[in-house]
Image (cartoon, rainbow, N blue to C red; front, side):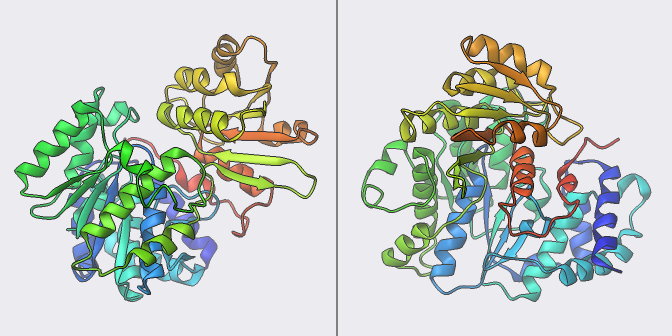
Amino acid sequence: MSYSDAIQFLYGLRWFGAKFGLANTFKLAALAGNPQDRLRFIHVAGTNGKGSTCAMLESIYRAAGLRVGLFTSPHLVAFGERIQVDRVPIEEAEVVEGVEALRPLLKQFPEAEHPTFFEVVTVMALRYFEARRCDVVVWETGLGGRLDATNIVTPMASVITNIQYDHQKWLGETLGSIAAEKAGIIKAGRPVITGADAPEALGVIAAQARAMGAPLTLVRPGDAHLPPFDTLTLPLLGWHQRMNAAVAWAAARVLTPWLPITEATLRTGLSRVHWAGRLQLVARSSGQKLLLDGAHNTGGAEILASALREFFPLAKPTLVLGILQDKDWAAMCKAVAPQAERILLVPVHSERTATPRELAGACRAANPLAPVVEFASLGAALEATAADPFVVIAGSLYLVGEAMERLQLSAAKAGDERGLNEWFAAP
């Protein structure tokens, strides 16, 4: 099997949709020898910031000299971004090995219960992290938590970054119902760390922690302004990243009896963290500045708008915006459109994209003075921004990934792998 064959096999798994439940993943992991039983995990859930928090925890423990596995999703450009050890993506040969090892096991499932793409990739990651003898694995949920395939592990600690509105179709229409799904990663007796502050959500998390006998550590918004964060050098832009850093710091401190770490190492790890596509500022050789930010839901769009006001108060950028249909795109346009000098609307390279025409009305209502132009593709919009001094590309991590590939901002090999991020409800 070639690497291309392996990727095509993974593409084929998308036909089995996205299913919520743990039975398939438990069964597949058992057939693979239950690698999760020989690994230590920090399980991270939350509406926004979970990827950044995972990157921070990974950087902290790598600075401490540990071998650290990192499992995140979606990938921006290349599939290997999802499965990393010491921030080195899984090699193509290891992807092939993982597919070849798991493919025969899939025959033991009835067709109606065939594992999905995410279930297979979750077990592939477990096998890889065990083979690489990781000291700790930073383990990000996919969607929700309670019924997410990643929830077959018993972590050293559970982290819930925050609770905001997103994926209501699957997680529920209230903050309480969303929190209940995220709190499903809490395990008996294992510490919980959260930065959630909405009373409705926090009440659900606290109740679940009590029910599971899990010690709960709360990180309040004000904590991000206190020492050591008032003097901490953090490479990631935005106040929200300081809040994510406070959550990661608190988690590392809670785990000190099992994963010893010094304050100096904590500072070093946070000062070296890198996480692409989240308020990522790029200066091009032409002098043009690009700001790439996934901003994939209403909370993310409000964070982007706040960051533009804080860090670029005098700038009125060109905004290239593309959003998925299943997001609250009207609210997202209302948040970010007022910050722009002009707005270029594009489709996201996804079957779930909102059309530029749909976004146009919301953007014109939010910023009547800005020209709003609809484009058939991101490539065409980028050509139209070539002479603009400051360009913001936002609205979806899928869009940011495409931009990174088109603008050659990623070291990943170009290939048709971004489509693996597509998922649908099971037939």
